[in-house]
Length: 267
Image (cartoon, rainbow, N blue to C red):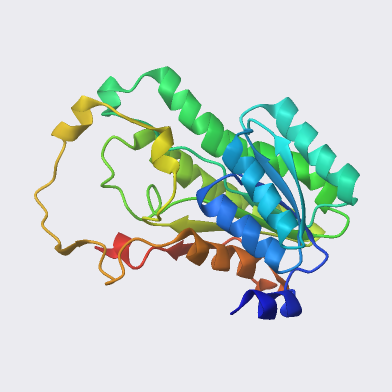
């Protein structure tokens, strides 16, 4: 679909969408796709050049967006960001709780408690905080919450050294299901997306310890760990799924984890 056709279709036209982790990777791609389809964007991330570039790109293409400098593990800053969104646009219709880090990769014995807390604080607590503080602004009109989980912790468990990350991602799937049932009375749908290998910048937030390299399993995949010929996915492919779950085209889907991994996790 071309940009021109997308703007004409406007699948989320007039909706207000909050995207956490909007400065790069899946968050950036989703923000651009939602804006292309007519949504007004609130870009939640720590301030840097990439974050501002997303805001500027949306503005250049005729969309509307503003950036909220936010640490998603900080309750006060997340609450402030949601209040900013509601004050500027009067409502929140879509929340894409996407911000996350790989954190420190280490065997359980060598993983520091502080590193465990940081990973779960950003990934799982951050999802809870974004949902909690968006809810007062979503309950009146309903809407859609989409959570970025992962195949790790939900359908794949061979990511050695990723016990904290995988636990946070498994927790997000459980949280999505709990929230979906609790919030159905307000017309709010909650779903989790579970990407596999996607070309993003998450590696910048990864600290791999030497010990984790010593853990191996004797498995040789016939074509590597990416069965589909095109290899790792692109953020834009995940953005298409986010758009679908944010729009009325998925109006009867809630409490569901959807895998987008090119069958990687079935190996």
